[in-house]
Length: 271
Image 1 (tube, rainbow, N blue to C red):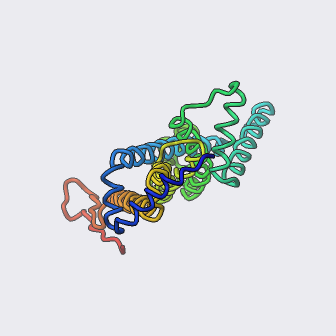
Image 2: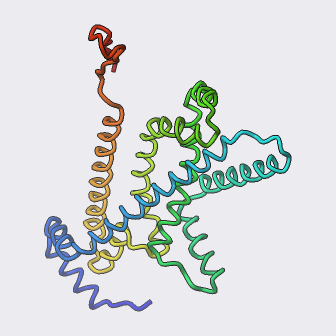
């Protein structure tokens, strides 16, 4: 690596002439577009990764709850599939996402003769697979939380497993797991920072590039930290608002008769 003492001294001299607030303003002014690019990539990867991960979680939850078949061949296939799901969940929950990113990104390159995936799709793939492992357990817990009477009632109406899951159980499950899904999205916004190891231009990577141009480490990372906080704080408040909307009103009316107003029963929740 070559050193540039003259350039370094000039930059050091210039940096000493600016105070803290001037440096912050200078960073925002000079790298505004780059910072916006980092924010966009961070939110894009986190959002798509969370949605795809949730889909993976729902599919694994559906498969895990399929009643054991009496047919020996089908029963064996079920055991194998459930075993694969269990291994997938344990591996991706038991290893850091940074290591997973390196294994998946460079593993693909090894299989493809040195060709690598585009970094943004690769980042989405990595976050999705990682999130799917956590969502699988979240969804499983959400399904377990539904009263068994719901299953029995659906089956008594002649519904098969698929109809029961997608018409009765999963809609109720989504309401129960929404806080956990929201939390997973916020975690993904922060965890996209590990994707800098494969060259994804997310928010942290942009900060790293800025530092190489001005050597203002504290000011640059402070800006990045504040942006992360604003993103997660805003997202959390929006998701909590959605949760309250889905929870419905504290006061509602049960209509016992369409013809007799006295049959209306007003109910007020304790919350």
